[in-house]
Structure formats: C-alpha cells, structure tokens
Image 1 (tube, rainbow, N blue to C red):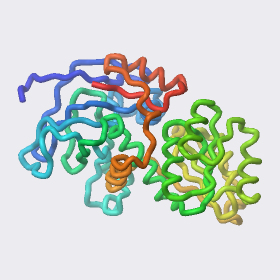
Image 2: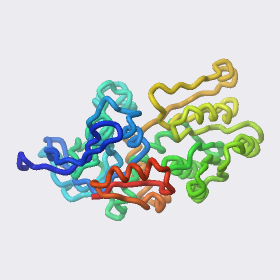
Image 3: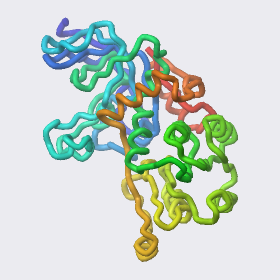
Length: 345
C-alpha cells in the first residue's frame, strides 16, 4: 500500500462537532485485516459520545462500531479468512490472557479498548482490525441486516447476564432501537408477559409488532399495568434501555421481591441512583449491569440474524452518506420515528 494513501473519515473533534477529513488510510498488520466499510449504524453510545457524555477524554476520535464491510487486504499471518468476504467485527480488544478475558468479561480487562469508543472506529472508508475479531457473514444475509450484529449481540449478552428464563415477566423501559431488540430477544427465550413503556406512538406500535404483550404510552398507567399482569407481584426483571436516572428509580418500584433490574441504558458519569438499601436487602432484589456484546455473543447474534429470528425491516429505514454525518446525528437526536439511522459508503 502506498505510504501516502488517504481515506475519508468523520472525526469528532469535540462534543457536537464532526469534521469529515482526509486521514491516513490504515495499514494492515501481520495479524490484521483491512476492511472496506459498507454500512455503520448509529447507536445510543455514539450519541452519548457526540454529546460529550461518554469517552470525552478520547477525543478527537473516529467513532462508529456497528459496522459491516468487505475484507480488502489481509496480513501474511491471516489464514482463516478470505479477501472479498463480507464481515462484521467484535469491537472489544482485550489482552486475551487475563482473568476477565478468559471469562468473556473483556470490558473489565485493564488493557481493554473498544473500536469506535476508546480508539478509532468505523465512520471511515477503511478500518484495520485484528483478524481474531472478524466474523464472516453468509452471502445470503443483506448488508443492512449484518450491520445489526453488534446491537443484537448487546441484547444477547444482557439477556444472559440477567438470566431471563421461560415464563418470567419482564418490563422494558424504552421502545427505541435497543428496546425493540430486547423485546425480540425476550420472545426468543420465552419471557412472558413482556411489557414495554414507550411514549412515542410509532415506536410503541413497533414494539407491539416486535412481540410485546402490552405497550404503555402513558407513564401514569405503567405501574397499574405491570401489577395487573403479574398478579400484583411486580416484574421478575425490569430492563432500563434509555439511560435516565428517573427510569432507574422507576424500575425499583416495578420489580417484585426477589426480582432484579437489568441496567443497560448509559447515564452521564455523575448520575447516581438513590437506592433503598434496607428494602433491597429485605426483598432480596439486585441490579445486574450489561453494556456490550463480545466474543461468543457476536457469533450467536449473527447466527440469529442469519436465520431470521429478528424482525429487521424497521431498522433499515434511514441512511446518510459520510459527508452528511452531522445531519444523520441530528436525526437520531430528534427522536424521530425511525429505529435506526446508518452511514453508508
């Protein structure tokens, strides 16, 4: 590759300000592959980074992590992949050797980095990544479906961490993109009933179509709905998928004795939850955090998508070229009726 090769990339230079620049095209190391990016979804984490609420110390940064692309070049040590193959990428780079990496808890690795979050990612024409993190996509899977692998992996992992089982009642706070995927994942593992709280009428309808047993659009009706559908106990699990302290407080009021909260939505760093400690102890309640899919979660997510276990039509409704990335982020921030906004190349 020529030393002066360049590419277009969207660099977040400070909160709220992207610059589309010519930057050096990444070189491909011995154990790496160079991927020509085709499509990247914008997720809530990207919006948090854009607004300066998350990973602000990493700026300037090329964000983007919900990526799918084509292998254009491979390092000489890469033997298990092929040029021209469409792939998705596990964004979590751990050391691979420590206690946490061995347990697939890579986010707790002291040397962990995440592509597009703590180091440069996929809002660019090309991305070089370690070959061990690359997962081939079957030729029958459309590119817009493959681009959902990372967010689906997140709900796969959250469901595992929350240990949700057949017949358990679950409340999902928020019916946006990730909330909708939570609903679909809950259907797959047999949760029932599934209750969603979502004020946006269109997203509420999409949550119903995704498999929710009840969707509440008026917050003052939520507690009554949950209690009436759980014989007055409260939910076995409440998933907070928005990232608002007020919703975490609400979740505490909706779980049954012995139930737990799945903490998923990212809040601002200084946000805190005033927890009723004695009540939590006496009721044996708990909170279980989960933030990203990794390792086998990614493989399982792609398998589910490859076999049409998720309804994805509502996630392919809006896309923008890289040059219009600011407009794309404004679309996400405006809480539009689209479930997913993507950057395409």
